[in-house]
Length: 195
Image 1 (cartoon, rainbow, N blue to C red):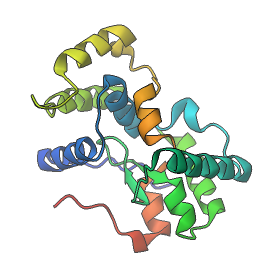
Image 2: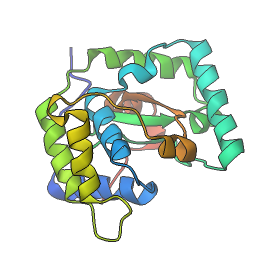
Image 3: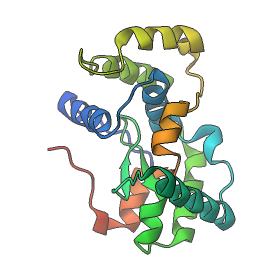
């Protein structure tokens, strides 16, 4: 069986482009949020995406729409990177549903996440890399990242939640799916390029 979680050997420029795209797109103010984005990119959705059926998906789409009406935040893109590994895509549910894409297909794609084999060492390297992307004029500071590492026992790579600030601004209107399978089924969306 082919590995659907391809191990992309990204160049430094590619990693930098993905990191910058994330930091430019979102106003990351909490270490929890950068960590969660990276964690999901390596380990998958964790406890967040446990029930995979049509009723749960429809409920998640409704919640994404309610969040949009409440805050005005619209993700715009149907999919975006999750972490630096290029193993998973975040599928923005409202955009996906509005595009007329089949809901059952998204469920089938998400079910394949159970086959994931994370690499905690790669995750820790990616975390160290992300620390190099923090610049002086950002709200998020290196000191916050160090305090966060001490607070969560970073050496164990525990799952953490998005911060309340993140949830209020951006919500949780997405599901994770394997990147390679998504583009097999939906080539019309093209692969995300960072040239």
